[in-house]
Image (cartoon, rainbow, N blue to C red; front, side):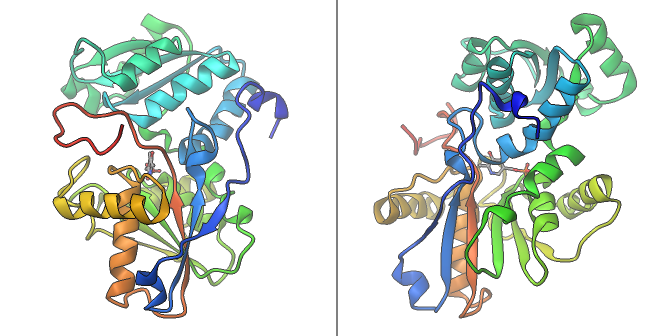
Length: 310
Ligand SMILES: *Cc1c(COP(=O)(O)O)cnc(C)c1O
């Protein structure tokens, strides 16, 4: 990519790959290595960086001065766009689902400190946020902008995530990642060498929307859909941002064993799912899996119960 675009952000790439020493894996003859994408950048970590990279490049090339994106009040993506915009000299607008709540939560407060302008959109309008009339209304208020979709997942994001497998210089069979919108899974799968597979752990509950999204994103990015990926929907632990005592215990135990804090919205569900599939031999002996730690523990979510971070 144009080196000019990353100046001011300086991502740490390639992110490190580290093997987990864990008797729960060794007993079953499976190796799991973690790829520490959370270490790419403190404010634009992991898949958020990978998904933004080519979007930022295109926005710059086309002469846009402003980035606009969408998200919930606790969106890691909105936070990342604010930080990237600030570092690279773009103005940023965050369109937040629902009503304004003051004081701002730590994610939005951070975004505002990066210079992001926030605007709020009622849930009915938010559902059709990318319809032409809604976007035209936003252009009237904020001027020309480069639109990055909710969660950052589009064809350019998929191409950014497709670069991840090329950074892995050990032999492996399987890549495990957490899946929200599916952009990360779509890209990783597309970037895999022949014979290797990707497994996405769906963090939202219910529906078959995710495989449809992954197919749509791969089609949009490459014109075709691969068959080297699948989705496991058994480890959502109640749904988005929900968790159970089992999940919290897994996070505590993982921290004690490996010194790594797993975020409970995404990474912990993927990691716990991976270990359970090893224990039930659905990931068979002899497998080497790469588990992607794609992001940081987000700021505490008030009202969401026990905080496991900070
Ligand atoms: C945003 C995020 C995801 C979800 O990625 P998608 O491309 O939306 O599937 C997974 N893990 C972490 C840590 C994230 O921040």
